[in-house]
Length: 119
Image 1 (cartoon, one colour):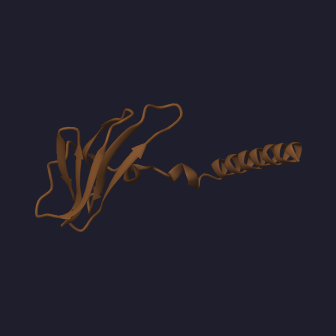
Image 2 (cartoon, one colour):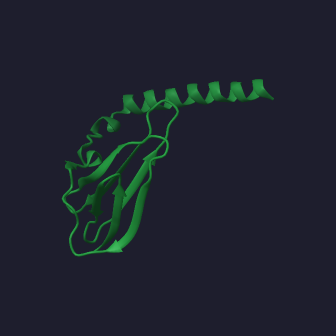
C-alpha cells in the first residue's frame, strides 16, 4: 500500500490504508495552540483511524516521506466517522425549512447593510 512515513521527535509511524488514503494535518489558529495529526478513513465501515499527532512549538520539525510498504503501524485510535451517524430527519419538517429560510434572509440583510456602510 502507499502511505506516509512520519517522523516527529523520537517517534516514527507508517500511516496507510489499503485502497484508501491518509492525510497529515498541521493547524495553526489564532486562538488555539498549534497541533498536528495524521489519520485516514477506512472503508466500507467508515472508521476514522488516527496514528499520531500532538502539540507543536516553534522549532519543531515533522519529517514526511511518501512511501510504499506492506503493513502500516497500529493506529492509536479508531472511531466511527461522525458524518455517518447524523440524523437529518428534522430537515424534512416544513417549519424547520421556514426557520432556516428566515434566518438566511435576516443574515443576508445584515451583511448587505454592512457592505453598504463600508462603501
